[in-house]
Image (cartoon, rainbow, N blue to C red; front, side, top):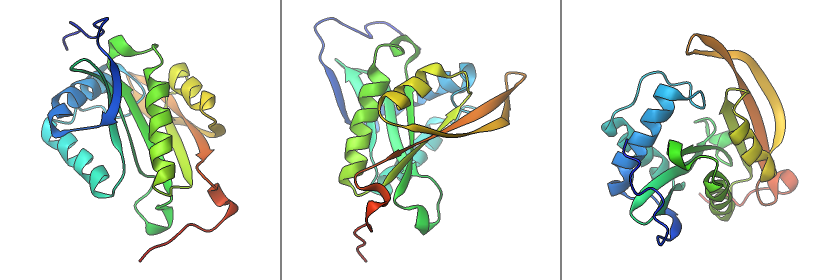
Length: 187
C-alpha cells in the first residue's frame, strides 16, 4: 500500500459518501486490517468483488458507507449495517471503522464515527453497537467512549487470530430518542 502523499499539507480533509471509485482504496485498507490487525476477526482478505458486494448490501438498505479523504487520497472508511438480519433489529445498527495505517491516531476515526452517528440518527436508527475485536484495541474503544458509547460486555476468547485468543468488547450508544419512544414505522 503506497503511503505517498497521504497528508499533503494544502489538501482539505473531507468526509463524504463512498463512491464506486473508492472501492480499491477501501479494499486495500481492509486488506491491511485483515493481515495485520485484530480489529477484524477475518483471516482471509476479501477481494474487490466481495468488498463491492458488501458495500452494495449496506447501501441497498439505505445505510451510510462513508470515506474520509485528504486531497484525492482515501484515508479511511466507516459504515453502519444492521446488527442482525432479522427485522426486529432494523433500528439497531453496528458500526465499522477502518483507517489506513498511516492515518491512525490522527482523530480521523472519531470524525468518521461522529458523522456516521449523525447520518444514522437522521435515518431513524435508535441504537448503535460497537463490536470491537480485541480488548487491547484501545484506539477503537477510546473513540467509541469519547462519542458516548457505554461498555455492555466482553465476550472472552471469542476469536483465534495470530496464534492467540482475542476478546470482543461490546459497546452501545443510544441514537436520537433511543428506547424512549416508538420508532416511526412506514410500510
